[in-house]
Length: 243
Ligand code: IPE
Ligand code: IPE
Ligand code: MG
Image (cartoon, rainbow, N blue to C red; front, side, top):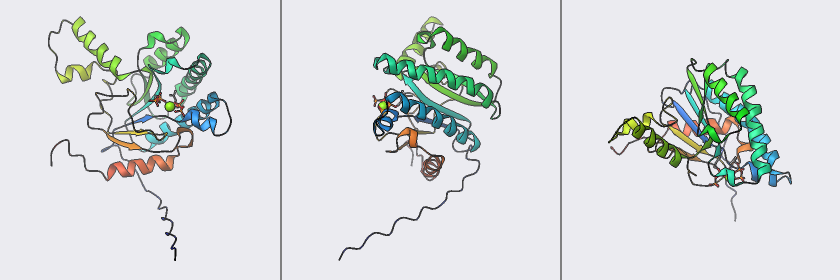
């Protein structure tokens, strides 16, 4: 006789201000293309839906009291995609910055772009730099990783240190010359889309991060699942090599 397992009861999760233990959350926003493909839509539509989820999820994290939110929007390797897709992603990011300019005032958040802005179009670059400058006195941080690659970031940091005349460097020297100098290391890295890899994201900074991998495609990610990831994080024991 077969017994059907009783469906696990979905308990609501009550989370208030989690910022003391979870200061910095980072997202590898993966799965937009597959979300579109499953609906017979062009990949660009997956990115469009993904951009709206990105708006919601970042606001949700700030409302939970998290100090810094980092999102991986475009990697140094993503330039190898078809030009049409790259153009669509850049246009969505530009629209997003228009929206964020107003919206993140409410959350007292500043914008920081992680990555080499020199490869962006002059208009996107100017817009990003203007908002970075205009928001720089705010207390929370929204990092958007754009034309970001962790290996390039470490090389750039080393070259800056050499240019400053250093002949030997410390860990703190490197950390303070990374794009994340303001926000520090992530406590929790969430990757959607079902793959178990880091894809050149925050290699130095995630040395002791906790990871949460989910099969959920980025456009399907809900505030409820973010809360579940946070709750799981809060229940973990971070040993940092100790006991
Ligand atoms: C993530 O979604 C967004 C970017 C990398 C820009 P993908 O576009 O990688 O979606 P999948 O992995 O192909 O489904
Ligand atoms: C990681 O996703 C980069 C971003 C989310 C921006 P990718 O889709 O580029 O990663 P891979 O190719 O699966 O490693
Ligand atoms: Mg992908």
